[in-house]
Image 1 (cartoon, rainbow, N blue to C red):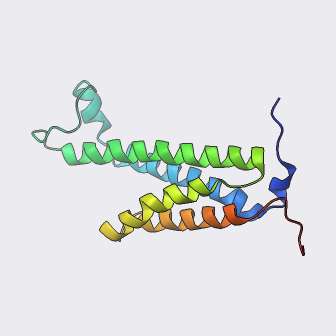
Image 2 (cartoon, helix red, strand yellow):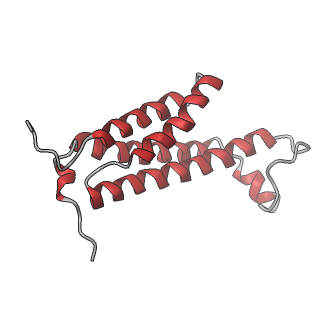
Length: 141
C-alpha cells in the first residue's frame, strides 16, 4: 500500500496543487483544439492509417495540426498527472518537471512568440519554484 507524504500540504501547497492542475488544463485545452479544429472526418474517411503527412492531400496542414495538438495534449496530461502523483507520494514537485517544461517552452517562445510557449515557460518556472521548497524544513528554522 502506498503512503502519501503529509508534508505535501505544508510544502508550498499552492504551487504543489496548481502546477499539476495547470498541466492537466493545458492537456484539456489541446484536446479541445484537436477535436474542434480537427479534420477527423477526413482522417477516418481516408482509412485512418497513414492519412497524415501526405502533401498531396489538400487539408494536410489541418490534419497535421490535429495530430500534434492531440499528441501534445497527451504529453501535458502525462506530466500533470505524474506531477500530482509525485507531490502526493513525496511531498515535493520534481525539479525535472520544470526543467522539461522550460526546455520545451523557451525555444518555442523564441521561435514562435505568439504561441503556447509563453504559458509552457510560465508553468515550468512555477514548477521549479515549487521544487525549491523543502517539505522537511521547519518555518523560521
